[in-house]
Length: 108
Image (tube, rainbow, N blue to C red; front, side, top):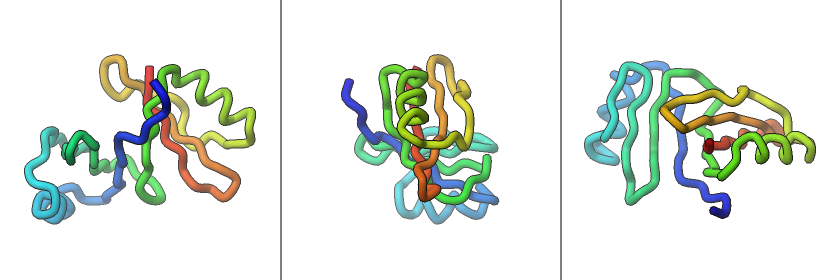
């Protein structure tokens, strides 16, 4: 699989306040938990998350998360959040470029 951006996660402080706005824009969510709300927009995941952050993060789907992280770190990226499993068989990590822009990775 070639790298593809398939999701964006938007940090929000208050899901109860954010959900009506995004529901009005995107319809009913497919996942609605106390920390994560996910919307399917023509196969693209738009999610709200209470885990904090400086702004939205686009996640690139990669075949091998560890290999992608290693290559980006060797190229000069810096780690913002280490790799962590967020669902069975799904791991994410956020790196940053030299200007501090987030680079989200999602894979196995």
